[in-house]
Picture (tube, rainbow, N blue to C red):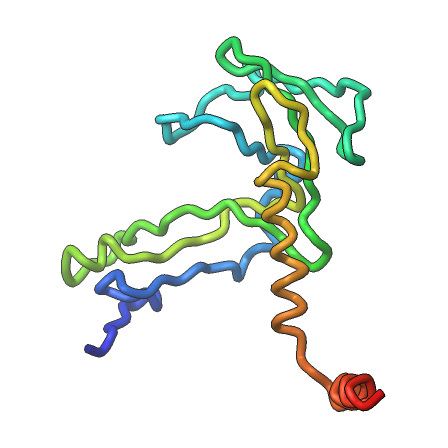
Length: 169
């Protein structure tokens, strides 16, 4: 089945998706403001988060991570910032809504098209009841970046020659 594309370049049938990062130099940088909380918040929209959620530095360092403390709905949270690896940038995405132009059908209105609204270079993750450490599963998932780089790094003729020489020794 051929995928039809609308005037914005997005799929009409929702099978494929598109993320528009063209204007990422002009979007706000939310570095030091992105938080991964250990809970589910069933709200989607603006709220005065900074009025209620006020992380404080503790002066404690665990596994090289500077620990911060905060409270959310009366629960003590302890967290640390994890920088994204060099060459990587995170984005806050918003689903594109069909514009004022006429849409051809309902599936076009539900297209899987996204655009960047903000960017960031670190994530602050939080734990209940435990200090953050390099053994945390959230922290460990960042190891994938180095694995992915190793897997997808182009192999040069020198790499092959070096490997061949090691095999014959």
